[in-house]
Length: 313
Image (cartoon, rainbow, N blue to C red; front, top):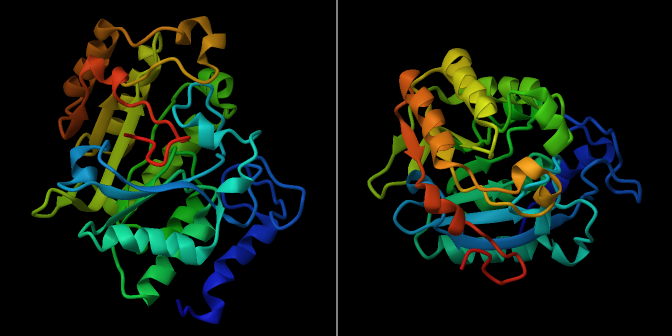
């Protein structure tokens, strides 16, 4: 697999890593890592066809998703905790670039022309290397940036023209629970600014092709947490006021108590149907009608196991 000698140049940014809002300034080539505890490697837990996303992301055949390890948030209720927990040893998931490309290309060659990067905010240089390598090899799939919303604005500005579809979470507009559950009291401020930048690039329209795939645009996800409908309503209100009621929103009810959620009494339960409907109504009252809602039973269906070859089957 012949690639240009300078293909790995973006990784140089990891020698003083400030690519996410944590601004650790860590040398990820050294033994002393930053908050995410990730190095310069292509640390990827799974490259697979995923059909569990929103219909416009999964399309008719599924999306090729690349799941990075570690995370710049440590959410106590994380459904992907097996790969995102920074205290775990993820060295066995380090991959050579050629193997990453081989696995992606094998999926793209089946006719799936959409490539998603999951939790890429602390792996943006690696993501850029993968995208430019694929382009060099003649592949230019639709690129989906599937993040937790805790993204650095400067990095997002640099991604304009590279990312086709932004698929960010918008978790919190309350700093106290952002700090308690994700260790990031500044999440509301940071995420709102990041979403504004994504909106600047994409606007409200989500362009869909004939096979049902998003080609360009923005789709915001929000997971309703049990006992926290007030936070959810504040998130929805921020989207309507600070961005636009015309933005596409996926309001998720798929929460289930996992990882460390059991340590928090309010998170031990599932989302109450009345609570979820209350958030849906507020969303509708604000004129946000483009997007998706979930059935309350969805919590039984979205339970990945990254110990398996295919986490979602």
